[in-house]
Length: 120
Image 1 (spheres, one colour):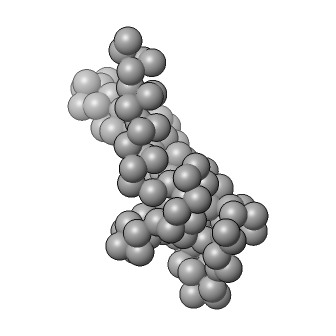
Image 2 (cartoon, rainbow, N blue to C red):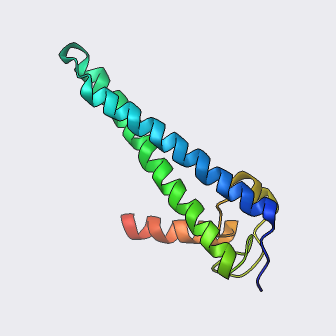
């Protein structure tokens, strides 16, 4: 069951990608500036800020990967269709996470599997 992606849906994904790329570039520039402006007196607080910035960069890189995956999925599976079970993804979920390619149930099952493998 392929659900054709509409122009507004693809536009939303592309806008999310551009916004995420802009945020990433801003954070990377901020991190470079922090590294160039090392001050021994503020070293501890600088390290904490760098860690926070780096964590944000990693989160945004993951989001960018998810967005790009969702854009690719629109061409094969369709937009708003769970790539595991094939059911329609709740429109409210897509409104909050336009890059979602899994329904809530499949996402939970995937996270449980990952969590149990990591800690089991």
